[in-house]
Image (cartoon, rainbow over all chains, first blue to last red; front, side, top):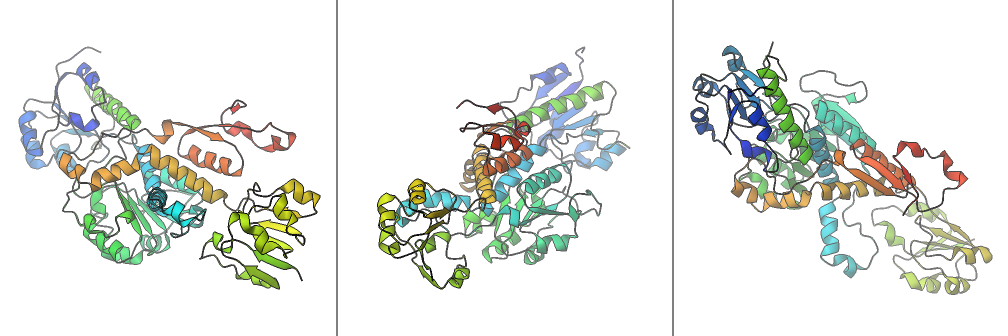
Length: 325
Length: 200
């Protein structure tokens, strides 16, 4: 392709990992790479820029108004909640995202967390490594009972690409899968659809795979946890704000649910002041720094997809434009 | 009336209800007889229930009334089965009760290790996530299970269950068999899982 001079600014270049080769973007135009622009710095960097590449920078009305030459926001993510899509549409700014690059990775992390908690893996591992195993002399140890996943019900909140993948893996583990749709749509002829309350009361494992919307914000709160089984395990690899961290702390401390695995948080990085650190038994909690999307293959695919989205835009085509009618 | 002794009754866990065995008239429960002391407690028994007590020739000879060894396990390696046959003693095991349980633990360990779960959990809980200031962290690189090759050594019931779960996770599954293939095994659908390798 002919090199053109379209001014492109990569606002959070380091957010894809230093092992990613971003030099392919130089083929698309005049690219400026900023390691990690803060939200306040965005308008300054985008003066004269036609294309902005970002992961999480906020594009509200104020920011958009301050970037008059902007024509495309190319997100290095699936989530678009940091962009005022309606205002972009009004201003003739296209917004592109990348879907499905992290399906396998997020599904795998969801299942890994659920299994590690359900099988008390950390406790058993420490039981052996601390020397208790040899001291207790029994060839096996049942101090912490656990169940076959094939005897459990796994509830999926949001049966999209990731939810479906998790449903498939849970089924191969023998779990009975049920799902709920916050938007009220049937998504599957294979799995039983139930309303949210039924999912909460019936599930042994609940995994969250829905987008962050007004309906899902704070969805897992005090009254939600009270409806769940006190042996239930919650895994959230969707947006952090879907789970109320203060209420989760209370729920685990008061044995209203058994355990939780979280890859995402309301504020990232998770501050040390978070109520999650006040959960007494930290073995009932697995916390990962938003890495479900971060496998080598997922990031590599993400880079390629963002490139293709921008390339298409430059060719006058629409690819993964989320605010196109 | 057959005398039954359960030599390691605690080995199945305190939460398992053994009372159905009380239907047998004369059963004695010993929670945890050491593996090499079976003869001491089974010398007048016709039926022995055990998990790991050794029944070698010496032990068998010390239990003249023995007619059945009922193992609470699949493995029979603690019993001299040939000698039992010679002495007219039957040996029963339990198969396929733990397929799901063993398969799920296998997959859990593989996933936890390949996802670097412990390291990431500690990264957050130690406060490094907060300190480093980024919404994500790439210091511990890992790969999708779906881009990996998963090798199974022994495609029996448990191996096949693991193969099925690994396949749903997207891994490419291959397996090897340490036994020679006999006619009995040809009904297993080998084609489903990659190449059959006869190498070690």
